[in-house]
Image (cartoon, rainbow, N blue to C red; front, side, top):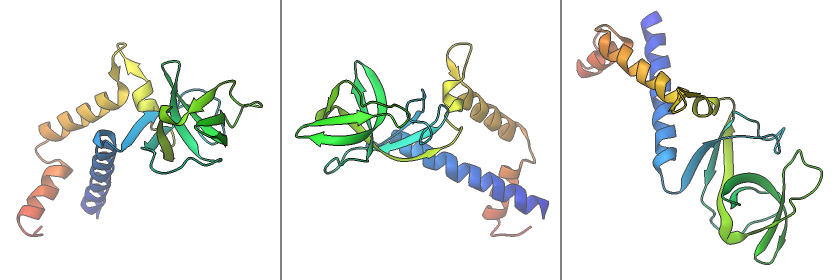
Length: 163
């Protein structure tokens, strides 16, 4: 039973990692860590935020990612004034003092994964994201372990499900 549980956990990990890689390298989606407090409680520092490219009209209530002053900002649209948008962070009392052109919108919020963004925010030695280090260590462990769960699962699949 323990072997099946290990394989299940490993399978879920691999599927999730593959899904995040697909989203990261797909031209229509973007993944980035949440930073700042302007969107609390909807979005928090350390959340992994997933957006898709803008398709269709922008409406009040949508959360968008846009570029302002060479920084990416994720705020909620509170009104549409022709080609310009008025935005506001959920934790802010007042709307942003600038208007956002629809052409500056880089994406529309889809969902978040709480706390997973910390893996890319925390940098070791000033350059290496913690998440990349953890995945690398996992791969080194799996390659070096001759009886790892990944190898056992692969052998079972290759033998047609035999134990």
